[in-house]
Length: 296
Image (tube, rainbow, N blue to C red; front, side, top):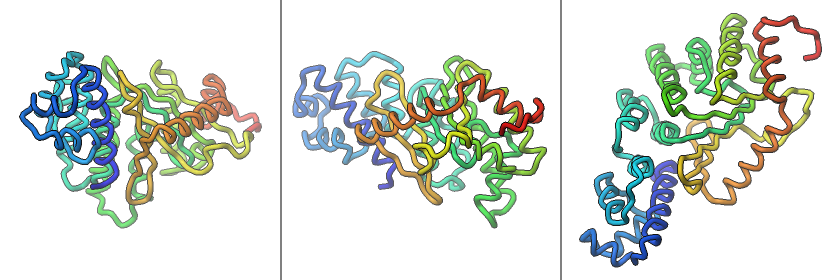
């Protein structure tokens, strides 16, 4: 079982255990209500076994959970289908890309689609949610050398489709810290890069996107060990997860001490980075919309 599925099962199991405890039911009593053996409930709650969405629905009924948003989130964590039009619209679109997407990426997409807030540090490239198509194409071609053009185009489609989470009545909130190196690396050439930075500037003005630049003048910072994303979910912080990207896979961190460490690190990064208004001034300068005064 790869890391993303394991994390999702542990998160789901822990939340179901909490909800069962609130009802005062023992695991044995819950199992009898479901017509299961007690060991099945234990395996689910410890993340050793998966759970079908229909069975999750039955458990939530048994536990008296009526909050539709929580029910949607927990059935989504089952990894096979979910309730509600919002989930169907935001979560299942990538199935059309079949085997093109590795399991770790599909897991990330499923978590991102259900998240309420993403905190991200990027030290090398613009975050995928904020990329233009031309920038995404150039970055994908550079990272996946030798890939046929049609597959690159499909991956770019996926990258742009992901951005649907930024639209709608309840868009994903994004807090991003970008190292200045992201702006200075001319991915796709000067024109593509200028258009990308202009796009960042436009997006930074949206109320649910908070963008800060970490200038070179800040020197070494807590994020120099590499980029990361913290996905936070509605209703309960117990479902939060940290995602670290590697060359061929992703690592999901979910223990409380890991979440605390990365949450503290991001808070430090935000304090050390330029404020929002100054960050927009830097973006405007890099986009060629402002005269460069030489201050860098």
